[in-house]
Amino acid sequence: MTKKKNGTFEWVKSILGALVIAFIIRSFFFTPIVVDGESMNPTLQDKDRMVVTKIGEPKRFDIVVFHAPDGRDYIKRVIGLPGDSIEYKNDVLYINGKAYNEPYLEKYKKRLNDGTLTYSFTLKETAVGSDTVPKDSLFVMGDNRRRSNDSRDIGAIPMEKVIGTTNVVYYPIKEIKIVNN
Image 1 (tube, rainbow, N blue to C red):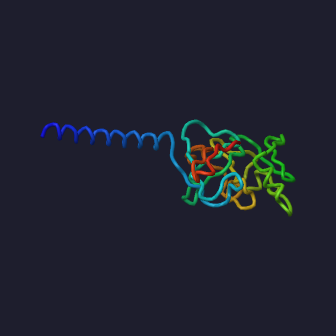
Image 2 (image 1 turned 90 degrees about the vertical axis):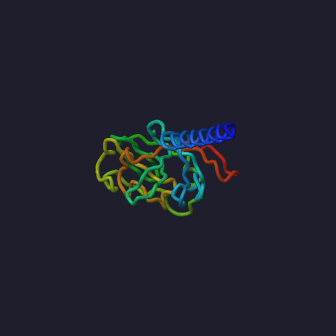
Image 3 (image 1 turned 120 degrees about the horizontal axis):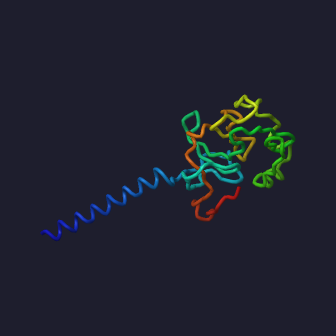
């Protein structure tokens, strides 16, 4: 009888230990997310499942997940960092006056039949409303610029609202990939 109790107790300890470790990993290091919508097309597809890394600070062109003002979690690309001046002119991104190439948009731009992917604007003309990205904030945009609710509409994203960065799609199985910036 004692051996059976010890065996059961060991199983319970093992299961509880595994649950605690899983909780810690999910809370502080990694968490799964499901892409909802087409705002990151063609880079990411609706219903893609990804791993979010909660370690480190987001860098320019990283894909981030954050808590949006409407209470949902959004997934977008970091375009501007704190202190950056952002402008789009004739479908070209300018950061602090310097033109930047966005290779992740090239395929999408080639498929366009009419106009530009990203309309021209300055940071001041967006919901951010200032000349530079505010301190401790990010300016983010979806890769599907024509169908994305992003910093142009909702303003700069405070760093404390950022859950983490992501670049690993693990589902659907045939679409497993690491997304390059």
